[in-house]
Image (tube, rainbow, N blue to C red; front, side, top):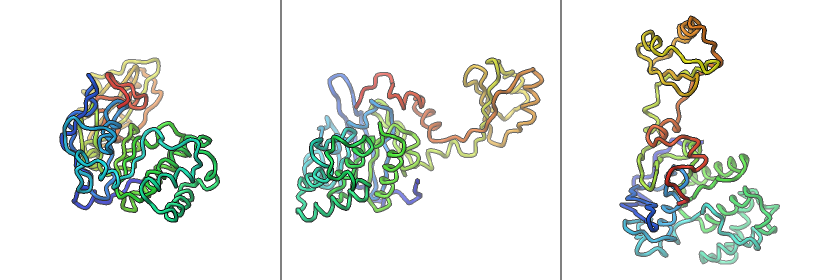
Length: 333
């Protein structure tokens, strides 16, 4: 799904400099800098509590920064947040739609808030309900929608006024796999239609699949920012084999190092060994060596390195902590 289209047109749609926000003794955002090019899909990747939602709230005028500058499509969003809000669409991590209103009436109401004429907002509501596959639920109250349906209608409400810039905060969190797949496709479609998108997520695969450039954010700081291609460059050309031995046996690491001079060995758990090299590994000699030591191989497989490996290497945060949102000192910010 990821596109190789160049990031933006060279002109920034969003420009952020030295952005900071503190809540009492918690530093939620700590000197953040980034630009988003026009027509770019930019990802902010980090665990829960890393500062992603606070960053979106600062960009959208829902919170005031302690310091820093935000420029959105040429508008100073710190001194004139109202003017900037009319240029953007926002999909918060929690739905802000009205539970008692129908899907159609929620979209009509959002259109009215943006000053759309009745005929225009009625037509736009019909268009979006059809586009998001919600026609059959159009007259039902929003409170009766499933989680996936609620996310889709919330995204529809965020783009009802055809904004050129869209901020999406954790759009697929807490929904079923099929709905998440549909929403990722909708995001890709919006990007391909020319919309500038800032996507926050703690799903590594989601960022890798959708985004052109990705910023790793941890404890309110951006610790790495680059194109997906550049982020993956350190792991390209590496050949990895993962070996699992029975009975949590200890592998003969010293002999392995003597025999395989150009291979990096790493113990990844009881009875587990990871071998990495810049050229394809010779499996036959490896199997023979282990068998000479009467070691039974339960599993031997090649591993394709991904953005997850880069993220773990840069941040030290494992996938399990990302998915659970359990990072020391973290809270939902």
